[in-house]
Image (tube, rainbow, N blue to C red; front, side, top):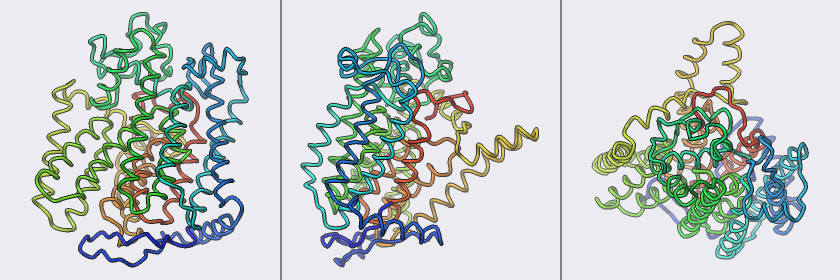
Length: 496
C-alpha cells in the first residue's frame, strides 16, 4: 500500500519489549520482498507525489466509491434473486424505489467494480496525504463516519448474502430450535418461508457455523423482527454499524497516532463497505479482539488477565477465529516468560469459550464450525490443487494435502511477517496482525471482511509497508466476491 514519505514527528517508539521503549522517532519498517517490493516501492513513490495524495482528491474518491456501492444497494430489486444485493428493501432503498431508482441489472457489476476500485484509491490517497503531514481531527473523522454509517445502515446489504443467513439463524433460535442442527430450509414453508427465500441457495441446507454470542445477537434481532426478515436484517445492519464505530472509538483513544488510526479504520471506505454495508460479524470480532488486547496491555494484575481471557472467550463466541487474538496475546507473554500470566489468561479464555458453547447450545455447536474448515474458494491456490485432484482422479489425496499443508504454511507466513515488522513495535499487535493477515492469504476459504482484525491491529502500529499489501488483498477480495450469495465450491457449510 502506501509507503510513507516521512514519519510523523509525534509518533513515539513503541516496543515489543516495554522496558526498552524509547523516545526517538520510528521510521517506516520495510517488509523485504525482493524485486516485487522494489517495484511496489517505486510505484508508491510516484503515486504518493501525485494529486491523489492530497486530502481533497483522496476524500472525494473515497466518498465517490462508497456512493457507487450505496447506489447499488439503493437500486436493489426485491423480485430478483442473485446479483450484488439481497432481494429485499430497507428504508432508504424502499424510498429510492418509490422515487424511481433504476434497476441496474447487469450494470451492477461495472458499478461495483468502479466503486470498490475508487475506495482503494481513496484509502491510498488519504494515507499518503497523512504521511505528507495531513492530520485530520480524529473527533471530526469519527463524527463524520458516524453520519455516513447512520445513512448506510438503512440501505439494502451489498456484496454478501450473510445477513440473510444471520437473520434466518436468529429466526430459528427465536422459534425455540437449535440453529446448529435445524436447517433454514426446514422453517415452516420451506423455500417459500420469507427468511429462507433470502438465504443463498447453497446455504439453505446448512446449520450455523457462528459462535453462540453471534447467535444471541441474531436471536435478539429476530425476536424484534418476528416474521419480517427485512426488519431483522435492518437491526443487524444497525448493530454492525454500532460495533464498527465502537471499535473506531477504542482505536482513536488508544493509538499513538490517532489521525492515522482514524484513517485506517473509521474513514476506511473498504471496511465501511465490507463490515457496515455487509453487516458482517467481523465488526464485532474486531471490537472484542481489540478490547482484549488493550486490557492485556494495560496491566499485569490478575484482574487484567481474567478480563482479557473473558474477552478472548467472547471473541471466540462470535467467530472461532477469535482464537487469533488469544495467540497474539500469548506471544509477548511467552517472550517475557510471564508463565503465570499466560496460564491465567489461557485458562480463563478456554473456560470462557467452552462455557459459552456448553451452556448455550452444547459443544455440538462446534461440529458445523469444524466442518466449514473443508471449504475451498477461488482464487485460493488450494482451488487449483482441488481442480487438479478432480482432473486426475485424486480428490481424496488433494483434499488431505490441503488439510495438512495450509496450517503450517499459514504459520510460516505469519512468522515471516511478524519478524519483518520492526522489532520496536508491540509484540501483541504485530503477532495478531501477522496471524490474521497470513490466514487471509493462505487459508482455503477467505473473504474480504476477514481482514477486519488485521486492520484493527494495524491501526495501532506505526506506519509500515504491510499497509499497502493489506489494502491490495482486501481490495482484490472485495472485487472478486461482491455478489450476494456468491456460489461456493463446496456446500457443506457457509464460511465462518
